[in-house]
Structure formats: C-alpha cells, structure tokens
Amino acid sequence: MTHLPGKDSFEQWTDEYELVDSTAVPHHDREGLPIPVTIPIDLAPGVQVVYTTRLGGSSIGDFASLNLSEFSGDDSLAVRSNRSALEHAVGAPLALVNQVHSAKAVDVDSVIGSVSELATQEADGLVSTQTHIALGVFAADCLPVLLADSERGIIAAAHCGRKGLEAGIIRSTVNLMVDKGAQIDTIVATLGPAICADCYELGEKTSQAFAQHFPDTVGETRFGGLGVDIVAAAKQALADVGVVHLVDSCSRIAAATQYLQEDEELERLCEQDGEGSRLVERIRQLNHPQCTLENPLWYSHRRASLSSKPREGRMLALIVRTI
Image (tube, rainbow, N blue to C red; front, top):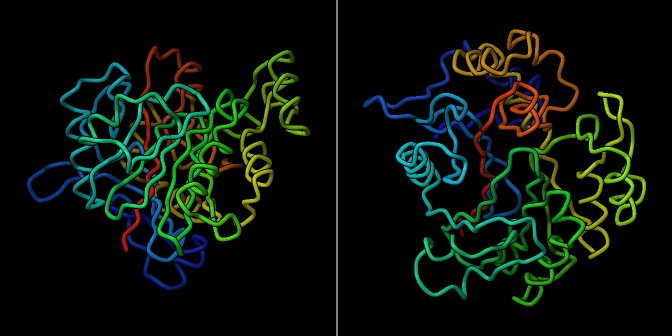
C-alpha cells in the first residue's frame, strides 16, 4: 500500500524530507499489480484510520481506478481485485455492510459466520472489539465518521449521509459502542472526506428540513442555491451524545493532495472529469481538500453528475485496531 505523507502540513513534510517527483509514487508492484494509494491517520494508540483514494486499482472508465463497491456497476473481477489488494495492504479482512442510509448499527462481533455474511446486513454503522479487522464504510460524497475508545479496545465506523444523519446514525453507533463497554469521555472521532457545505446544494425545502434536525447548517452554495453542511451536522450529533474529542484529518489530506499535484494517473482522471483545468491548477484552487467534489482524489456522485457520467466508484474509509 502506498501511504502518502503523514505530516501535519505539506510544508512541514518537505522541511524534514527531500521532496521527490510526485510522478514517482508507485501505483504498481514489481509484478505489475496495482498498489492502493491511501492516506493513513493515527486516530488513537493502536488504532489507525485509512482513507482510500481513486488511485492504484484495477477498475477502468468511470470507475478508475480503485473502486471498491460491488454495487456500482463496475466489473466484479476488478472490484474483487481492488478489495484483495487493499486487504493485503492493510493486513486485515474488510468488514462491510449493505449501506442503506439508516440509523442501524451492527455489532460485528455478534455476526456468526464470515465477513461475507456481514456484507448482506442492511446497516450504516459497525462496531467491534476485534483486532486486525478493517471496519469500512463506502462514500462518494457522504461523510465517513470513524470512532475509537482505545482504552477499552472498541472501534466503530459510521456512514453519515444526509438521511442517515437525520435518522440518528451517529447516536446509534455511539450507543452500541457504550453497550459494548466504551466510555463516552474516552471516545475519539475523526471525520473523513465528504462533500463540503459550499458544494452540497439541495434546494430550499430539503435544506430547511435538514435544519430542523441540525440548526445553523444551511447556507448558500457556490452554485447559488441553498445547501447543507453535513460535516457541521455530524459534529453537532457527536457533541449531542457527548463525543467531544476530535482528531483532524484535513491537514494530512491536504499534504497528500499537494504531494500528488503532478501525479500522472491523477492527471488522467482529472482530464476525464471534464472540469476544464489541469490537475495542478485544480489542486492550487482547492478551498476544501476533504471535499469530495472539489478534490479529484476522491470519488464524487455530484462530480459524476456534473460531468454527465451515469456511474461512479466508491472509496472506503477504514478503521483498524492493531493492538
């Protein structure tokens, strides 16, 4: 697995290490097999979060290249290859569910059988005490929230789209963590890539309905209409259940994005997006590196729609307990 820079900023990283040509980031191993390009975050002692990008996979066309969703319409062999490469890279099997924008969280430890059986369950949150298993949630604009109580060995992942946030997926996931022994005051969380408030236009009716659940999360988008801030809403939901310790993911994502500003594979994907700017220009113009629409590192349903693409891939946000 190709991990991208993990310093707090691109400048800090380049001060400590010699910067090499970013086109040298290896996307394939010596046998020519793709290597997933990921961004790691140390969430807590013995707990790591990993964000996959669009780079380092086997998928082609609209799904290029590290699509991890088997329900996207992509070639099933390519998806299996991508998942296998990712499991090998993180050293853990993927634990996934059938996401349905609900408030349901599942106890992974109570599922009898293999992870393939878990994948048939309709849910949007996963909780476990197991080591060396990668809890994962798919996203392509929705917000992944990863949580851990490292003192008690409990980890969780929640898929937080607009509907799931309204339904209460964060509360359900945290409640299940507490049921398994977690303490609210020792839970830490980080928020992954998601569409930002400037880009998530929904219209007045839907936006105002969202504001009934999450006040002060509605505003004008860069497209001129009303939209919502699902990141701010998730922070409200976390605070409402008492989770106040947040680890920032943005600085490392920003550093990784800058590092890839001349990456050849990402340049090709940028051209396919049809937004008119070269990769280096798009990255220099970024206001929100975590925004899935703005940053070409991520899959985005909205970007696909704006580019008149009928389909798009999905990233995974993973959390792994290593000790």
